[in-house]
Length: 508
Ligand code: GAL
Picture 1 (spheres, protein in one colour):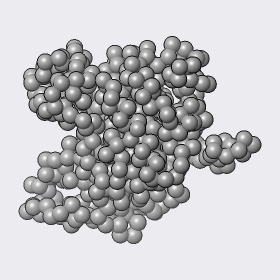
Picture 2: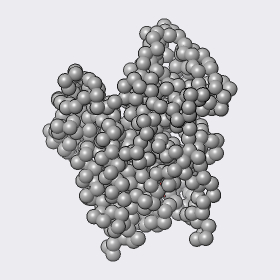
Picture 3: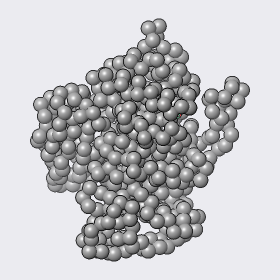
Picture 4: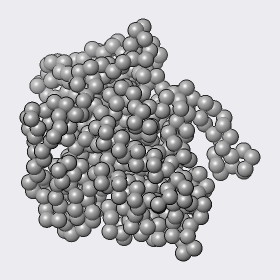
């Protein structure tokens, strides 16, 4: 903790000031979801995310019958058959100290009571996803400490499929890229205490023209459950534009998933075109994309970070525990080179000579832009799905993904999405109320010029989410720098072009 990630921009435009937290050193800390949803009677694999010098010793009281904690702090077993809430008192100790926390295990139909944290293959690997990539990524999630900070999902996106289904209609994985199928991949991911996601589409083809799920919902859901899948991203290429039809198709898959004996999260991906925030929760969706695919640019174009954030911010009312707006994956570590995010291609729905043609290449985000991207996503209580080669992460990539105070803002159990409170001259001021009565405030400079501003905390904290009772004085912490700024009424910010700052304020 306490070092500043190196800037690649040189001294004239110093990089973002972010602490680099070491997940394997110091006294123990607990992180990750404080409220965990699981369906009655289904398998639970949940790492009690903890950092600190190893070895760590875990003790948990309040676990219902059927569940135990292994030596690595992973809760395993079968959830109770009855709905209800179990309060787990978690304690973790090492040679330097001890930490306590309470995790609520909520047995019921709602999953993802905090936004899912994890990784997805699409941005970086595109059609080149394989068993080897997935297992290597899961291992890197452990080796980098991401799992110990609460990241859990390792999601296979499009192109895991064989050229066609089995004769009986069962789904099959690609014989070369997944030579032993999905099941051994899931087993390895589970061994590591992580969860496996997969991908399909509510039509006869996926966006990559692999077989889709329409008409095969039951057989697919049963296969996914038998393989050990924990999340399904269900896309909408080659499907009709009607909202009622989309709802019916997602509903059919939601029902099929609920009829299995696993807790499988349904991630709705129709890009926000049919207002899924209005119907996705009813059909079993725990998250839904609100925008078209993200590409590696900060621009105002429909696939740029700023535009996506602006659209997603308007949907704050619809987010909450078990129901998340999803502004798409993180571009951290892509640097313009992601197979899917570095180049813009013509859609696969077009006829053969046009389809897939490259029409644009992106340079990628600057260090300040990627810092603002993660800041905005954490404030919006967005699912945080990294999508780069984790093992090749730079110091800045890791600093951005492993900051426990920023992750705690995203994972706050109240589940409120930040609102844009003020935006004077291109400075977005966002406020996100936290369960403990505090409020996270971010300021993002949307201009290219360096900007200074004074943020009056009462004015931002109260607006948009109702009045905040305070004496006007706040304990303020800089979340990225992980240091206290003392007791204050206001915060002075000095932002590089496209830079951000993020503070947590608690009534003094
Ligand atoms: C898109 C989706 C992307 C990715 C891709 C795969 O529709 O938005 O996130 O899944 O399909 O082909």
